[in-house]
Every structure is written in C-alpha cells, then in structure tokens.
Image 1 (cartoon, rainbow, N blue to C red):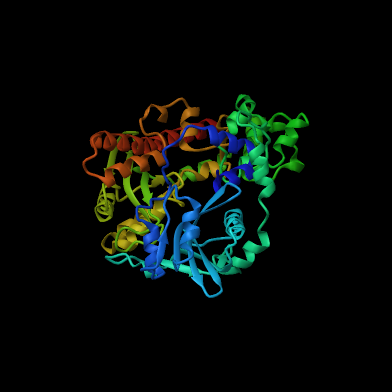
Image 2 (cartoon, rainbow, N blue to C red):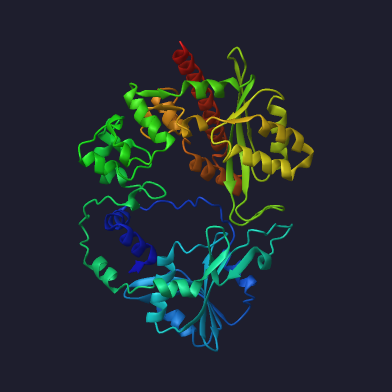
Amino acid sequence: MYHISDVKKYTRCARLYVNEKHAPKREYQPFIRLDEEVTSLVAQKLHIEDHYFLGHKGDDPSAAKQAMKSAEWLMKARFEYRQLRVKVPFLHQTDKGWDLYFLFIGLYPHADDMQFYCDEVWVLENNHIKIDQIYIIHLNAEYIREEELDPSALFVISDCFYNGKNHPSVKVKDAIYKSKRDLTHVLNEMDQLQEDSVPAANRTNHCTTRQKCRYYDSCFPNEAKEPDDSILTLIASQNKHEMKKEGIALLKDADSERIEGSRQQYAQILADQEGGLHVDRYALKSWLSWIKYPISFLDFEWERFAIPPYKGMRPYDVMPFEYSLHIMQADGTMTHKVYLNIHDDRRDMAKNLVTDIPAQGTVIAYNAVGAEMMRIAEFAQLFPEYAAKLNDINARMEDLQLIFETGTVYDIRMRGQWSLKVIMAMMNDKSYKDLDINQGMEAVFQWRHLDYSDDTADHNKIVEDLKKYCGMDSYAMTVVFQWLKKINEEKMQ
C-alpha cells in the first residue's frame, strides 16, 4: 500500500523514496505547534452536526464507500485505488455529486503542491466518485482570538488558490484538472522497484531546493572531502558542478561569465585569491564605528502556533519563551542574564527585557531584522506601557549577520555558510556539540514538554539545558564580535 507522500517522494527522487522507506522511524515533531483537533473545529465551521461519517486510521476503504450511501458528510474518509490510499478531509453530498473540501493548515494556499491535490482527485475519480465543486479551507490571516476560539471566524472557505501577493487567483478546480495526471505508470515503477536495491544518486535541483536533502551527504560523500576553497562551496551557483567537471576546481578560478554575481560569491572568490580571508575593511570599520558600549548581545527563542492559543494572537503568531543577554562593557567585562517562561508570560518577559537591557549602548542580534526586532515590535504593540523603551531598544539594534550576508567578511573555512555554529566551529571556540540541546528546533521541542505539563520528570534538567543553549547563542555573538574587531585592527595595520 502506498500513500501520497510515497508518490511525492518517488516522483522527486527514487533514491529518496527508498531511503525513507528503510529509515528507522523517527518521532514526528512538527515545526509549527498545532495542539487542537482541527477536524472538529472545521466541522463547526461547516455546521456538521449529524448525518456524517468520521474515518479513522486503519479503516478499510469499503467503510467510506458504504457510508456514502447514507451520510451527508464524510470526514477523514479513506479511499484506495491501485494500492494508493488517500485520506480526504471533507466530502459533502449534493444534488450534483460530491463537493470536495481540502484542508490547508496555513494562511494562503498557493498552487505549488498540485501533485497532492491532483493525486487525491485521481483516486476519488477512479472510485467512481463524481466531484462537483472543490474548495480549500484555510486559516484566516485577519482573525484575532478573543477569550474563546471562534471556528467560524478562524477559517476561510475558498474556491481559489492565492498568488504571490496573497490575492485570490486561479480557481482550485480549474488548476487541479489542468494539472491532473494518470498515476498508473508511476505506481507500476514503484511496484517494480526491488526491495533491497537503492537507485544510484542523481543530482537534480530537488537535492538542494528550499533546504538540502537529509541524504545529500550520503548520496555525494566526496563533496564533504572537498577543500574549503572548492568551487562546490560557491553560494547559490547553478553552474558550479559544470565548472567542476570542466576542471575549474577552486573558487579563485571561477568563470566570471557563469556566476550569478552576488556579493557573497564575490567575497568567496576574493577570499580564495587573498589567502583565505576577505575583509572589506572600509565597510567593516564603518560598521564597527556605529557600535557603542555597553553592548547588549540578545537572542530569543520562541514557539509558533498555527491556531492562536491565547487572547490577542493571530494564526501563526509567535510567542517568545526565552531570551539570553550578554552585556559587554568597554573594558571587556561581561555579565549574563537569561529569562525563561513557561506558558504565556509575554508581559513579564517584556517587563524584564526593558529592565535587563541597559538604557544606553548598542543592542546586537544575529538576523535581528528577521527575528529579534520583529519580536520586540510585537511586544511594543501588545504592551503599550513598555512601548517607548522597547522601540528605543529596536532603534539601537544592529544585525551582526549583515556583515556576512553582504560579503563584508568571508573566511573560506565557512564553506558557503555563516551561521553562528559554523563560525564558532571555524574558530575552535566553545562548541554547541557539547550541549544536550544544540539546535533551535530541539530547544522548541524541549520547551513544549514544559508547556504541556508542569509535572515533567526532568523539568529542572530541561530548564537548565534551555538556558545553556540560548546562552550559547548570545555568547557566540560576543566571540564573533571580538573576532571582527581583531581582524579589523589587523587589516588597518
């Protein structure tokens, strides 16, 4: 038996499908928090009260077919054709057939996952189910929660996909029937795939689209052995593998006619030409001149909720639960402060933040524009009594990541990456690897244990580990900042 996720993986990469099929089962931890039973909430939106069938995991497909004879609504019904099983969110019987409702747990469904929608329709039609209208139910971006959740306002029923500007565009049904395909040949190929065979690795755009495939390093193990200045470390390059095959092995020898010309790429090439380190000393000196003591190095950790759990929150709002603050004085001495809340203590966090951060000096964060500044602006809107001080903190904020994003500084040991973890490893300083929590999402997963229950057996251990991890992020910024000061002084000599 296959599921749509199997077909999607196989279509993307046969090797990915086989690797996933034989991989040990991993505990599923969603990136976005979703505590509510969404089907029952949507049922309230659709006013489904009786004459319905509710499917369950493991149902024989004949159960849904039988229920169609008498039920007005089918929810989470299982259907199967050619061993491909699908779970259909909602089907509604009308005089013209069945209306199909897809469920999108997001704000604006775009026509970028057509395979999923088309394959579900293909299975339904091969079960001789006449589909009339097709809708997508999604979360309402304008909804603001009151004390109680309001399902009627929380969801939107749309017959259109949305465009890049999040405006309604093509009709869902039209788009699906335009893209629908016969899956027979794909399923035949999957049937014929030998159980113990792993297809050869074949590099395509899918290998690194959005994020690098988890099997990339095992598929192409030789790339990890490439030197730091290998042409294969060239950022966002469509032609680096082609150049490598032609004998252009190093960054410094990159074909200028076949690079995209970004600042990061030029910084990489110049770093190789300049002995391993490129510094735009005028840009770095200018940036450092804006930094005033005491310097506050700030890092937040937060959770994102698909469905707002507290009053005043919107769908997909963020709730910070921790911050770490290292304060550096002009003489190099530092103090460290950390705040961690469990459940919703945003007001108390905002209050502590404006107390802990000095009233003068620069505030530094990594990816400040896309993270810390946004969280602080949200606090200012939520808690007007602290708005003036919070807005002042943002006015004094500098983004440490910009030094690397703009190519102002590049060391070939970064190998095309510039996260704090990569830079710290490059400098052989304290390692995240020594921490029990050493990834941002792992911190979120562990905090969920605290939020779900105050009686967690290892409550104190989780609190300690969370503080260490967040503290490492703000500490890492102090190390990187000192390194930038040092190389600036060396370049100026």
